[in-house]
Length: 406
Image (cartoon, rainbow, N blue to C red; front, side):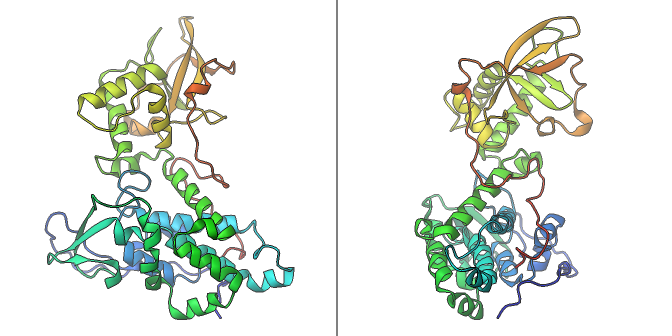
């Protein structure tokens, strides 16, 4: 019914913008799908997707909403980016599965397009309920907008509901999926009973009953979140000022400017090399906690291990090869002074613009492979995903060929 495997579709061309008019402070002007999807990053994510109608409807519905208030994709347009990323990851994961499981090769070939579409749309819809239950959206005329009214046509402002309930958005997907998936598409998918049942479970937020379809969506979501928390300074600064990742980044930048001493001939608080910023773990953790507490900021971790965990969870640290937050290294200066330290490693781009970066350390920082007795207590968890998320602002993997085109 649907011709999903097609030639590469030409890029969306955004229409000429309407004449600009001044908006009252705090209001956002709704944009068309073509305008929202016209950024280079989003075009890259879309370039192998032929059947775009549900994605365009999704873009018009989520507009400039973030995906979360203070965690991943917590910036204007974050929900749209997260939605496109999770589709890309879900389709990449789908490549390694012959679906439906246990069916004959002939049946798997006959159902291939339908399963690919179901994976993509289940991924796209997994967070759409947040628009209905997590956000309060007010139009320019003072009335409230709800997503079941259809796309926004007036200027709007939004805030997060203080009384929102965690995970309610998964159950709210059923309010909105018909905004994206039309009758003919649902008619087509419902003709495949082995995928129709798990798709309905996903749309109801019951991933535990959705089998491999639910697993693919959950794994793709983890991959997108892990990529987003990979230390992109522009996105960290675009996060709301009350977001924890923004507080941490602001605090680290303040400490590097005002308190911490770098690249000293002997003992220092840290060392800047060509490939990393190395900070003494206990010193920077103690000072960061003290600084944030002095600013009256709530939710600050109570001990150093918790600080390491939070910093790594928010993509501020570069982990060791075995996923730990703390490195052991031997620092040697040009004067011959040498000492072993436990260090945190950060990307210098998180702290300085390229033209503001100090001169690198003239000595050496060499990784010490000798295990430390307290290394285990200093480890920080790394998100578990089944694909390798891109790091440092790179794109999610874009695949070649027709096997995952929708």
